[in-house]
Image (tube, rainbow, N blue to C red; front, side, top):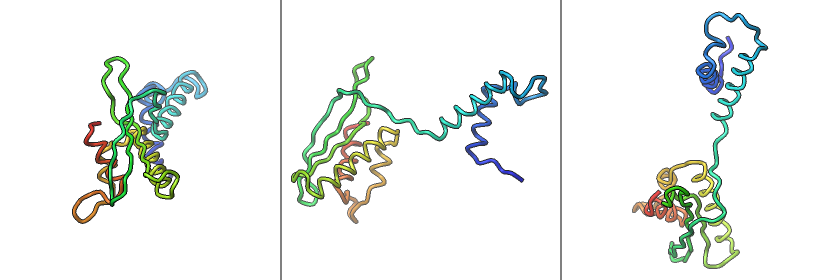
Length: 160
């Protein structure tokens, strides 16, 4: 018995909804006809939509706010970037994060900078800031264990 993967099953369901006449009822046309091509295209598009996450591309110019923070007696600069809605002019959710240590190009600066890039990508792929903040390691008192956790909390406080 051949079981379809959940992805295959879901893409077939979507294609059936888009082109219901292809698989439903009796067919009086060939499997290579226009209807089959439409269903095949719908199935392919559904598979791509289900598998390929969509990354929000940012405009070249956007608002950026720098916040000086201290964590574990070390100074850092956290940059939070967001775009404006072109129609309303209102600020959108935070879409990028930059973190720099005081000592530029140090080992810790490289680590926090790379981690902030990954956090930015999570935001651009649609991961909620609250989920990122909840996932960060905490001290026994509930404070963020790293400057990345501090940045995630700042994102949530500045409002998505």
